[in-house]
Image (cartoon, rainbow, N blue to C red; front, side):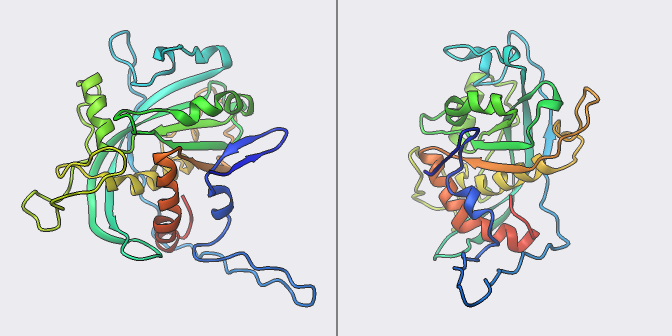
Length: 289
């Protein structure tokens, strides 16, 4: 984990700040006093846009039904309104590829277009004029078999001081199990099902998981395209995106930077995304998450 810090900002980015500045596959070129610096060619944008997920919400909140991990229902409750923030929960649906990574370099598609539905929490300034233009997208840590918003816990004071937006995404089937146990009605539609039936030879007999045990009926590998698609949605002008359409009539602050965050297990996810998935995203869509 790399920490980038100055007097005004504290950003945990797990190499994403540096690597996202380079086209896929490019390396920094050392300057020579006698020769001009060779600049890597920029990625050429293709006609194919990054797929946007279908986003529904914000979901209603009541005394009986509220988001798992809601700020106001933590062990030490947070009143986001006191710092000028609001919290919203959305359902996110789309189609994601399952990948294999047999050798160094880009991953390869193993099973295409597996349907999924997950959820995300968005914490943002209530007054759109306070939005900094920076968004942190965190894969919620599933190491305890339920979602942990570790990035928000570590950085919330700095996020609020800057006017940044935080997005927490459920990224693993075992966390969906916990969500359904918490509120079966609210989270009934969530699914990260394995697109391959149990009798398909491609459905591993002894799947290997990261920290938490995997299942043959669900698919941990949907997280990569979910991450890319949520990043694309954050930058988009989709009607469902509150960052693109503020409700208070204030001029929209465009999203300037989207930072990925992971800690421990999900920090490893960031490493894999950078080395296996980002190359494919840039090659296919012409830009980065």
